[in-house]
Image (tube, rainbow over all chains, first blue to last red):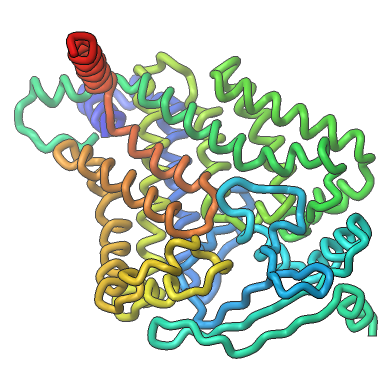
Length: 166
Length: 290
């Protein structure tokens, strides 16, 4: 890297430690690069070697989850139906916030991390349209590269909310 | 750039390379994809009062509690301000100030709508924003230091993704065989569920191993002069295939594939531009003659 070779050249030519001046920006770059490496190691190797990781506080070092490193063999597809129809709609249709390229996954992840979010979306949709909405959850098991449906649950929004209250 | 040559003249020429254009292209692509990523959450406060949005407390407990006390009108103004600032950042207006403000704004809204769980993209975003603020003087050593830092961030993220996959057993198992077998509506795009060739165990096994090899080797190749361009092409294709196959934010492509552009110095970009212009002129002349 050129700034490393520049630094080494500077060290070689300066005869007096007093005259040696390492630009502050290069020091900052080295420090930031070290922090980047530390953050990466902290979330990948350190938990495996020492069964712990350090809270490095800075926003870019606080988390380090690599998606799809572990791929579960079970999957749940959540959809919805309107008015007792048999047609299933994508969960992303329940939300007005349409994200380009990954709308289904975004809503699904939100639902998995905060189950009450599904209640809210569902009930708001019902209130807006006046039509009853049912949530359909299909669970699959992946064996030998093929998905096999292991369960299917249909429940109305209102039922879900009452069930949760109980 | 690591120079594998004993020729001092070549080495000194390479050391004087300028990366102003490639850094500018990276900045443009990065901020455009960032705007596209955050815009739905920011605009939702103007289209639907954000009622369909979700906020989670894992990202920042303090921000989560604070938003509960802020009127919706103020949140609307904040969202508009962040969007405006990020548009300025796209066009390179007052670069460091706009980058700092855009970064702070995006951080505030990162707990909205599942953005906070996409850590592999977000940690790179925060780091790249800080790099732009700290080292973003255009014209400073012709942007070499800025370019090195950006390329380092992208390389480390990709490399350690590969390390994480090795530790998770990607080389001994067939994880892509499971991933591509997911039903429609769960993580994969619809064409993947119907593509029969992606459900052949031999092919998915090869793809799993290839993924790990690409993630471990390409980041190193980006730093060696002889392999930089093939590595950049491999990175572009790799992340294009990922975004095409999986339902993940396009921001991933905007960060990592744009990082591959950083291997092109200004001389090479100028030569590419001249070649494209000549090719376009020849085609226009050919069409006119026909």
